Image (tube, rainbow, N blue to C red; front, side, top):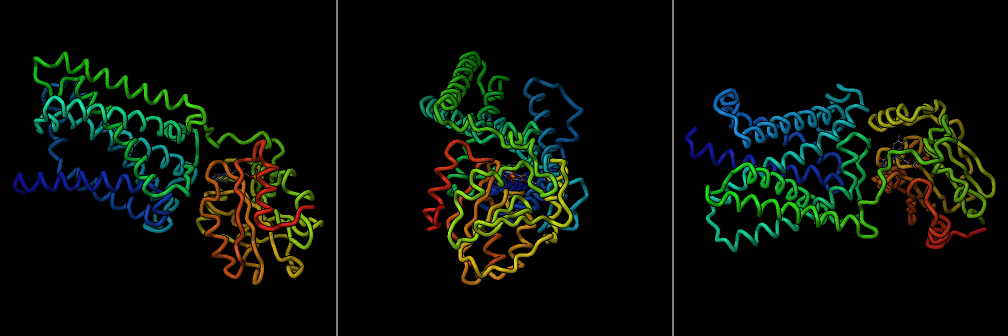
Length: 441
Ligand SMILES: Cc1cc2nc3c(=O)[nH]c(=O)nc-3n(C[C@H](O)[C@H](O)[C@H](O)COP(=O)(O)O)c2cc1C
């Protein structure tokens, strides 16, 4: 391939990879199927990128290693490893693009590694891009003022990007502390992309600062001055990030969901509820159910129905008592769209018009016993009012799942509760019931 054509092909692949990366990181916008196909696209582009840059491998063991070369080689190698791991683990969970690869790795391992490695890839991709910036900027021959302005703007965006990075709990993902990614599905797509871009710029800024500090892109006489400016800009970005983190109500204070709530000691074990939040008596019972409104509470497989009577439903084969095992069992159930058989059956649905349907968010959707329940009843003329406890992912895609499984029902205004709800739970529930016109006893 002529050198010029090869360069164009390399640049096109690089741009496509960056765009795809931003699409991949916007899972809450694209949804699962598209995310998987983008992942396949990324894997193909990665292979193309390496074929186009094959000479890099040959040069690895030749020549002197300067500081910059050590940094570049380390970043490139780690990036290659992290993208490859992300891809393999992603394929091991695939339900759409490459379903035949499903299960090639244990589910819990694949989930955690996919999450951690995808964010490591994101970070390293940013740094990798940034490492090229000083040389590109030198080629652009910008004036001193334009350079300073561009550097200042990047420092501000990077400060915000780092703040977003910490605030959205990503450190928990990259250090394997959190098994799920928690996305705000209500966030407008533009904002999701803008935030991800700001984070990518932050890591590119770190990369370009590393390159400048190791002497890239500067004329000899200007080096000292350049290092000083880089150090000041890095400090500015860190300062903006720190100030934003310290602001009251900043995202940085949010807890990762993984730590089971205190209620976990009273785990419902066999029912499938992991921590007892969905079944919390604060909003699960008599105080709020009344009149002819049916009340169904399903903590991951058990539910209560009827006012004031309570029927508890349990899956015939209970979920494990062990938290990590439940994670795997539930994921497998979801993957195969299982319909776990329930011990009890609701025959008398006629007496209620409104059904309050409670469940924990499991893998960003409903637990599969809820699917069994929804498919086993006739909901025509009924209103299902969903409420769900979650660890940060709110409803996930559970509302869509409910409306698909009970197409004849009207879906009322839902309530999502973080773990067991916190101090405002009673008010939130009261407001939600009023909104849905449910009488309170
Ligand atoms: C199998 C399983 C999967 C989960 N998946 C998610 C999830 O995708 N998103 C989320 O926000 N929380 C998730 N969680 C956390 C639960 O939604 C949260 O802990 C909830 O409060 C549990 O309610 P429970 O105490 O009634 O089980 C999951 C928990 C389990 C056990």
